[in-house]
Length: 167
Image (tube, rainbow, N blue to C red; front, top):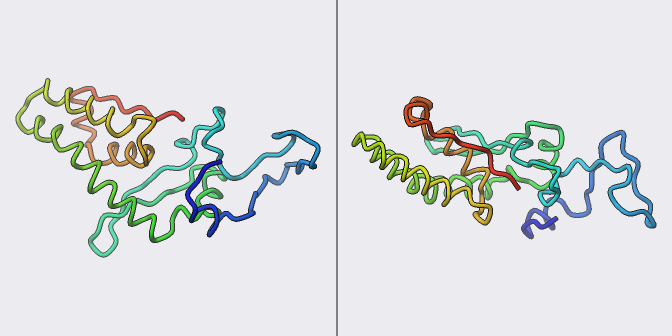
């Protein structure tokens, strides 16, 4: 599994937690065998990371913060083992929403204020392509921020569908 140097070296290291029912592989065996890892492998097509970890918005000392929350035991263990909730990453997440997500959504809000239905749909499609394309960093964070920042009445009024990004 690919991850940043800090997540791998400083946090995960040699940790490879397994579910209690797992049987650890012996050197001659091919994975996965009877192992059930408790750290997400985003390259595994059977795993949908966005169903295991979500980002929630809060305010800390007046500043917006986006924090990962595990929805499953595997999601929670991944956050802990990889240090996905460490201060440096929390700052990076907040910066991403402020500097990337919000500017991409601004044309949608402007079109909504102008009652420009076509403009809303055009801005929506542009934002979805620009933020949720599989090559974009922080896709899950972008998705969760879009879901929070665009109110339910706006989504309903314009029939905007926000699908979770797939691996």
